[in-house]
Image (cartoon, rainbow, N blue to C red; front, side):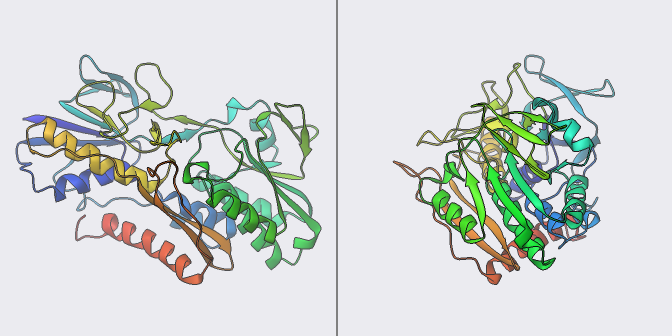
Length: 389
């Protein structure tokens, strides 16, 4: 019996299970195992809702039911290593799993210590982020207690999950401060190493977003790479020597892959098949490094974890002689951007278009915000319901 091992039960890993079930390939003689630390995940776009106060932190995690994972062996544990030659996965409890085919979907994790002074500023409560369920709750409390001054949103490094998140966060913070009737006493700015927002989307969406920020009296400062944080002076020091002071810093934390192979950081894959440099091993989602045909990095976004799962699963089945077909990664993607007042804009299109993607933002609307809510509800129902995935 051939063994398929899926590492990570987030959007990517669960999408692989969906694709296997929908493939119509004979699966009876396949042993399918999925590994996760706690079998709880979330859609990243729900975290700014927690920061804004629209959701409680406790309502965000999605925990697949036993029924939705029926027929799949579940292993709770942390991956500490992958032996690509022996074709084994090592877990933190010293156990190992053999595989004939492996899909790595372990995502990215926060790495605050990569920026000197950042962890200390966070420990003092002067710097917060919303790239985690508990952290988003802390950001909410910090904004509720904020009484005025300089509110700085900072992208500390690249790449990071969800290209619109820092800008969405600034817009939602502005919305919250308007609700508190103190917006006039707060100066909001965004600093990022990017030349403009959403560079993977091409040349149009970023300037549109900068204009949207300006309409909300939020200053945008591109091409500012962070060197360190001075927690005593509450100052961000950039690599070019410039600085900005803050009363409250809301930051996008540095990221790193949760699992690596070959000693690399982000796992390199074939941008069409999602296979790594090792036969029978695929990687999808945030843990990967994928370059689009126009030379831009593919965003670390849920839609591309799903697209990657579709391609990797079909190619895995072909590798195991369960299908005559192969598949290529789709560049079709989209992203919602909450702008406040329960409105959202959307950027949608083909990220693989040449000479560059031509994605633009739609006008914000309450309907698109509801569409975003519906997307989470449908995914949650798929995995928490008794009817199965």
